[in-house]
Length: 111
Image 1: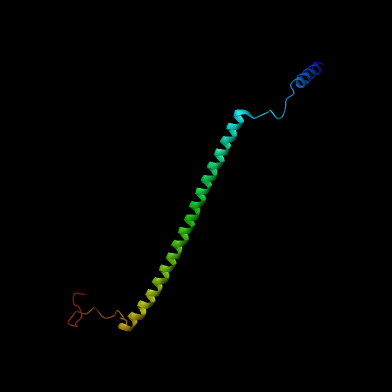
Image 2: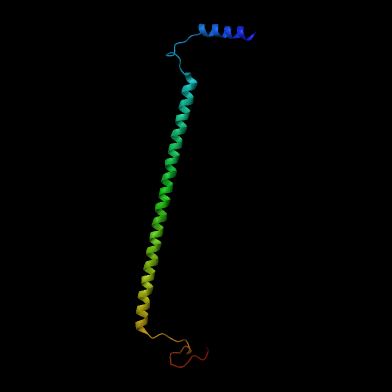
């Protein structure tokens, strides 16, 4: 029973307080919160851009280091192959059975 008079009172108050939708604004707090959200988004975008550049740069450096290491390994392999070919033509390989010789041609007695 008490509910009906309360609903009627609210209905009467709502009819008295009609407003123009064109004059309703969010106010200063709406502007401040919108501005803070915008600043946060801009800062997040700048941070993301910085991190993406860092990741891309690291990937480029890793690829460059890998290419340099591969080239160095290939050059070392070619140099080793060339060195073996040159060494093979100079002297016959030693068996390692005979002791090292002194300048006079005799085996080293200190040995």
